[in-house]
Image (cartoon, rainbow, N blue to C red; front, side, top):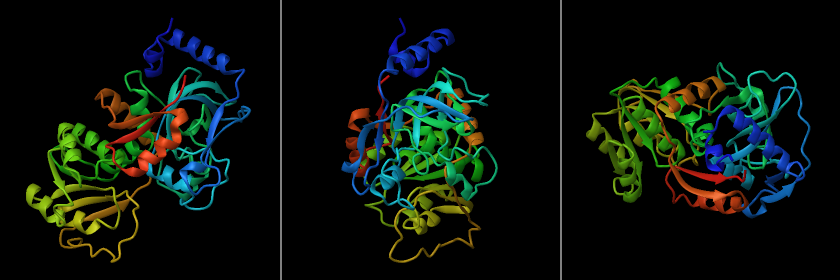
Length: 368
């Protein structure tokens, strides 16, 4: 008999795995899949759990039995109706997830039933430069997301997950992980021996820590909590600084390090001046966070005299995810997970995420 835990983690043989996937699909065939919908967005309590008849697959689509999802900041904004344009109340949220393929549509060639997969949340972005056209297939935003028993996604965004990468790690790679990878390896081109500043202790921040250390870089982390900073040092951070006790933390980081080479600006323009003060010459600042505008616009100290470069990014392509997945597998990297909720407690997971008391990612475990 297949051990369910090992089944979830993808550690069973190919024959047993295919049989298990078929058995799971058959056991659910008499049940209507459940989906969390945003409802009349405005509050997390408007999220609603509903049943639907399974939708037919179109050409190029894949049906996935979801095993885990992870929450990102934008998921909270979508649930509250704050993200770009209004969403239909039937939208299924959440852009980060992992699951087993149970069915493939006509023309699907890379993916087969039994594969464990993730999808970049811009599911049509296979490679090449960013384009706004990517929003047409934006998982959990313009198309249904992962917070359901099953999800249907285009093959174009899917990447298979190796056996030694856990469900929780794989799910969190989809948003936070690939964003940190994009920043470090596609934009900053981080090198061994360089110093990376990663703001905060959330999902992108902790993935930035893990990936930067794997690349041989030194890492500086910031937080207002000494307890969280202690945990960051346990995870490998070389320097930490409490920004609440050190309002001028940019100069403090510069003094500690001689100037950082890469900044993962996970907050936004509110902290940009301090981030630039922390930089050494020719540093690369990658804009990731989209926090509220500060009362005064950034002065951007040192931008010219230090010859700094700055670029904003959005998530990553399928090609980037494929490369990151390989690196995570080879280096046995595990995501930092702050709390796990069960599927039926999704509303509580959203509320916990909003409180920002956790480290790393908030994960939702799905029944299998």
